Length: 171
Figure 1: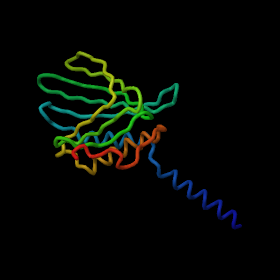
Figure 2: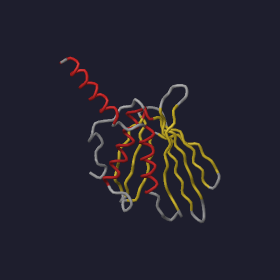
Figure 3: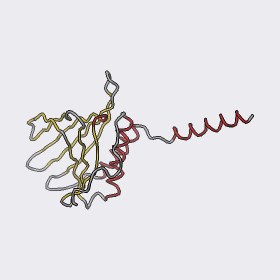
Figure 4: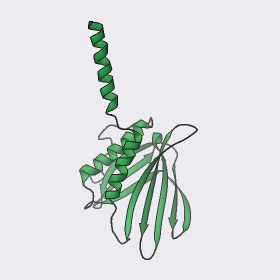
């Protein structure tokens, strides 16, 4: 009876532990809701980001695709960056009254396409920065967004550096 009770307890602990974990799709949905709240008006009419998670059909690796768009009466710009989650580090950096989320590749590059007024340019990035105005995005929300991206990296089999590995760029 004692062994049965112990097995039942272990099963319940394992079930509760697994049931509270957020899936990649739930995480990306939360990221997109947060990014939608962050759309802002600048010299461009609108400016904002979106994110999609895709799974490579051959390697089964998870990839993040970040979209950026900005429109003004004079011109229009959009970009798409393909980020292999297993191969990046993500951190937040505050600089020049802006909050930034920085993706840095461990090896290789991230591929992207930038369109300005209908003219495409293929880009290869070693780092990619998402920029947010401080008045729209507080520091605690930035930390939560970085944690969400780190969660996706872990789900993809990547490693997340320990807290405090990145120094404050303002120091």
